[in-house]
Length: 566
Image (cartoon, rainbow, N blue to C red; front, side):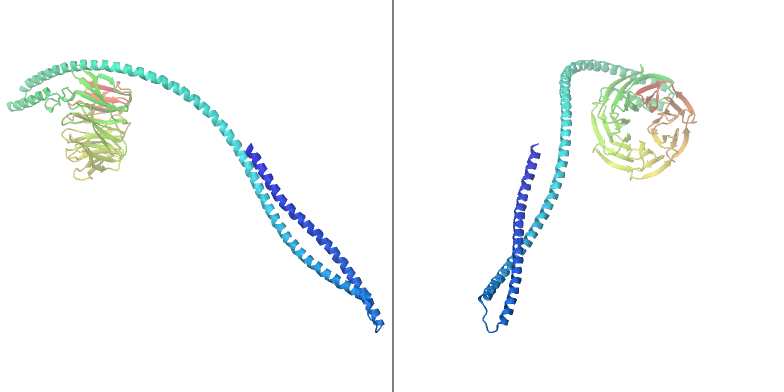
């Protein structure tokens, strides 16, 4: 409280100084007033004496006139002298009175100025008093806040000490876990070495079985074809066996099936069920050889599974990482069969090598979620996004070479030819056919609802489109017209990303429903051929047909994948 006492002392000192100045002025003013009163009394007395002297002078003059020829007596002269002195004294007093009047006026003016200054100082004093009160209130409020902050600081300090103690404990726990991880890594390395040795033996056995299977098929073909056909078949078989003996970069055999031995079957039951990842599944795809299955979903990973067709078993071989959000679509390189493409909701597409599981390319440039991506060739990729654009990417130069502005978000696309002609399906219910020579559409096909997926056959003659009006439409690409529509009472398209697929021989169309069923239609007559149900527990997001036509793979939202077969 020292500052309060200091302000009070300063105010007292200023009041004393100003009061002393005014006291001296008032004292001088009072003295002048008394002098003025004394002079006024004296003037009054002198005027009365003058009047008396004038009266006496008049009387003497009268007496002097009555005595003609007599000189004026001494008394008259004395009175005249007194009169003159009195007159001079009166004049002097009047001059002094004028001077004192001027001084009084000057002092009055000075007093007035002092009064005004005093009034101003009093107003200023009142303002400072109010500010002093306001500052006291603010000081009290600040003291209260300071007390509250001290309490909060003490609480935070206590929490900090508790967190520091917990951090120390976690550090110790981390050291223990690091030691445990080192031991587990050593064990895992040993197990992987054993597993690799076992897989090498399995590859050799697989090669031997495939050679025997090819020889058996050749013997069967001899009875059905002419000699020339048999000769061509022998040439194709020799190339297949050579391809079998040359393993892919990942150390496993991935034979791409040919249409010569293809026989599409309609699955009847679920032969393998397995859980993929930790969260929802959105994409599933077969490798062109049919020996691998890739799945992706909201765990941001692509899981690669090996399919043993003889034992009907599915086993995970490795996991591809690098995505920062949900995987929305997957595609394999159909030319060399050694690359895998994945697109994600993190606005990017990524390419991995199957041999070394290394991330080769990260393609960024879209401004929203990427819903679809496909290999056009081994070095050219097309992608479609929620940002209403399609992009073509050159893997050799690692850059975007074309951007197509569709005006509506793209849910799926397919490559019409190797030159870069694309077909895309959009939210605005249109299928757009893009010209490879420029950035415009050749034509558009209007459907009744948003397009969720597209599937094209190997010969690029037929296109299957799935839409939100709960139908599939088969489109003939020479005239770009709908030739068949597939529907079912229980088939419902509940999402913008439901994927439908054509069988390898285009004889059937397949799609998953929101009730967990898988529907298969005959593309010739448009009728439902088979409904696979009671296996999935939630909406089926995507389906894929085995390249040889022997199996169908489906994935549901609740991370479950199923392989269907005979």
